[in-house]
Length: 187
Length: 187
Image (cartoon, each protein chain N blue to C red):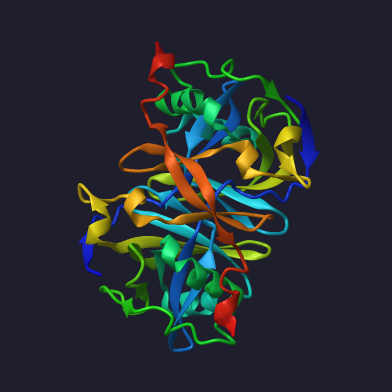
């Protein structure tokens, strides 16, 4: 095995792809992002990182609410479009059918198999990005995408992203069972 | 499409799987995590979320350095093992061949196709987790896993995780080109 030093601006392999939603300038707006992770177990919290100039950031700062939507493969062109154009220039409020839960400023996407709404908990200001930490208020899933009451990735058919090659990837087959595949090594 | 409300403690679909490394109690220790994302573009920063009682957290707090390592499919049992047992009870310093870059307290894994070392920038204290934000100091990749100088996911063969079904997933085939697949919709 031969290690070579590469550019330190490396990506995560792979990144999930979601559409973050907010009410900006009085309209629902959506942004494609791959910089997202769960950050707290109880209460459930998520963090999304947006570069400082994003139009969506204004809406999150104003209303302190946002949504996270998981597009399936059939929404790949629309998702990519949301990453190509800014809400400053284009109205992205009519690409999808929208719905709301209890939060009035967290527009969710009906066509996405899984969506959740968040209340803003904290903004961590970083040099070129703002990290928005939100508590997951409500989660909605497509009934046909559930198995035993929980979202089933094989039914959801989400996709992932790698950079700098800028490729979207399908989810592959099962590779093993977590908290189990390493059990033999515990003996 | 029929949406149904589900438990708000939902996961990200899918989560990347990495091994976070630190020097804890004088020894290299590794933890399997799926709560990770890039958070800042320039300088490059990453965030990892660990529940408050994790042994690895002590080492990151003490030395203000940690590593992130991307295991390939052939390391799945060892990766899962690192998630099953705590460094409090088991010595995880000899599972892998280790190497260091400039940082002395960010042990990296030779067997992983991609690894990077981080200097701690900030700890965001959340109710049940600590979010460690680190600047990526150095990145190392296996030469055979590069294409045009950047890591190639098809050569790296990493895997992802879903919960609560606790399944590891392979990376599937290409689904489209990012910042391109939605171009037709811009017209």
